[in-house]
Image 1 (tube, rainbow over the protein chains, first blue to last red):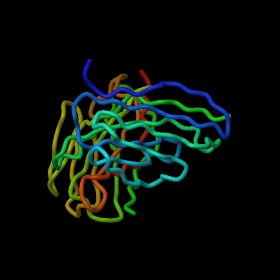
Image 2: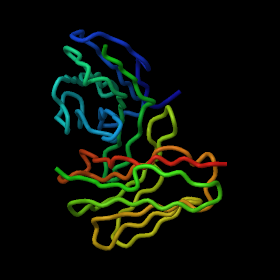
Image 3: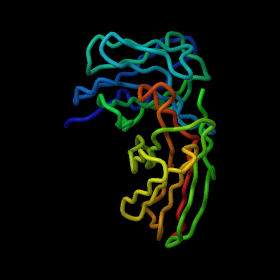
Image 4: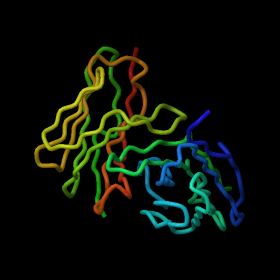
Length: 113
Length: 112
């Protein structure tokens, strides 16, 4: 079914390990985003991408790496996971144009032990 | 950067009651967006507002774009159990729609 999908939905890892969260969208939207959701902080932007091979930092980029070699994929990598990166991560996409409407995936819950 | 202050952060209401929540910004917004997040899901857009003073409805939901362009309100009338969730206000960060900033969210619980 068309839409935006994230994988894995749940992940437990250990401090220091590398983790990659995947995001795939079938709409060919230009913009893609990664947010993290934490109690007391709402949704905070980690990184975003305006098109393939164009990425930029959001509000909380430290400790994360992104890439966008294809329009439909926007993986988020934690190079050396820390406990403070335990969170729920949401990928989102948006059409080009001034609507501001984001379409979100179902989220990836990451626990770092 | 721009900050959105959303209140209340949580509320318990009786089924059938009306609900109000609001969002204020430290700077002017050209668009206000209201999202709802059901438990275990990603947020979904409810209402988008593009003009100061605009009042827009979506079923039992009504949202208003404040005249000062620094605030917005969301009202839910005659609440039902499926209204449970987290409601977020959001708006584009300065510089355009490339980045969308979200408020902290209002967690709504409806008592049947």
